[in-house]
Amino acid sequence: MPVSLVGQAGRTNRERGVQKLGQVSQWRAVDCGAVVKTDSGVRIAANVGNILGEGPLWHPEAQCLFWFDILRSKLYRMAGEGDVAVMDLPFMGSAAGWIDAGNLLLAGDDGFYVLDMESGSLHPHMVLEDDNPATRSNDGRVDPWGRFWIGTMGRKLEAAAGALYRLDGARLEVLKQDISIPNSIAFSPDRARAYFADSPSRNILALDLNPETGDILRQRVFASLDDSDSVPDGSVVDSEGYLWNAQWGRGAWCATRPTAASTGPLSFPLASPRARPSAGRI
Image (cartoon, rainbow, N blue to C red):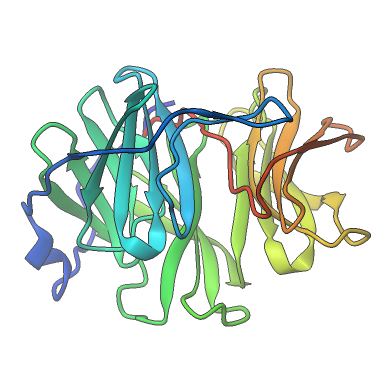
């Protein structure tokens, strides 16, 4: 689903955003080594040594996979096996949605930016907690109506420092406050549910939506990890409605039916898998 940026851009960052207006970054090739196959059958396609790899996004028109290394302020692009490039960002990016064949909307630590993928130019779209240097963006995804959901959190993992927002063109709406580590933002294929987790709570919430408007009707606990040593991280929903959740600390992906019956873990050779790619378009 593309991101919808209909309407005039919102208030831009007067101190930092204007300095980035029109700033150009360049892609450069990355040597990510050979594809590694593990005993579980999982392939490590890009061994780039991310410190905090987040926000995988598949762009169906560009046929590229994008993701971020948040703490290094880098955006990665994979155009094919072994064809990986990286771009340095002037902010800490964490999530993205595609606008059209040539442009991405990036969520950063102080706002939203439109990236021209060919020229590398960045243009501020709207601020996001730019008056609070203690927070940054984290998990985000585009909903079936083209609106961008994004969560914020404390840079030092401060409890209840963040919030959950929804960007609808030129309007930014607060959906939840007092969030510690926002994760697991995903949407069911029938447009009836959104999913969200504040990771330290160990619960994944289901937010029942109006299938026509996307308005939130109610919320409930969808899955709980209280009996495990892991916490819910990023999630994605497949075409059959199964929620796949990366469980931080367990080194596993777990698929859960819409009725909340888990199918069990798919183990990975790492302690903290983050998220599977989505194809959100703004």
